[in-house]
Amino acid sequence: MKAVAAWACALVMGAAAAAETPRSAAEALVGHVRATQDAGGRPWAVVDKGAAKLSVFDAEGRLVAEAPVLLGLARGDDSVPGVGERAAHLPPGERTTPAGRFEAEPGRNLRGETVVWVDYDTAFAIHRLRPAPASERRPQRLASPTPADNRISAGCVVVEPGFFEKVVLAQLGRGHSVVYVLPETRDWRTLFADPG
Image 1: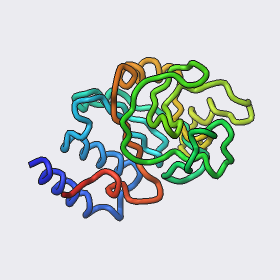
Image 2: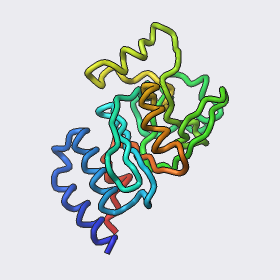
Image 3: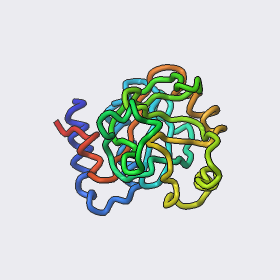
Image 4: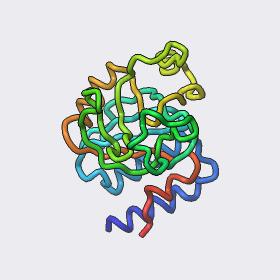
């Protein structure tokens, strides 16, 4: 029955594929995750790279809160091989936020800061905004009304510190969770919707 529901959901969503905006793709993914119960009773989140937004859901699939995010400087959906060992010294073209479904868990980075590891092997995490060179204008980018200037990180998803503490850690920082990152170079259904 679960496979039939997933197939029907994918079929309905497929009819409107060409006209989808980044936000409607995020809404379709949320519907898919709820319909298939893909998160398995765990809290989950959706990173919409097109809108530069993070949506966090509780274990029952209810939206807790949304916030703007900073994303990887480079456009793309895949991590470069070996990126985890070189995360601090990536050239601009390799600073992508990878797309996909990730089994996430809380932890600490090499500086001892609390993060939510989206993919530990590639050093991909959700973390709070940190001090950075003033020329990067990270706080201003987060606060801007458009997602056009939110590409600046090495690939991590960066949120305002209060949102990290009150929402991300409260929901995703207590144990295992699932993080879905929408692609920007391919159709989202190729990563998430399984019609079979």
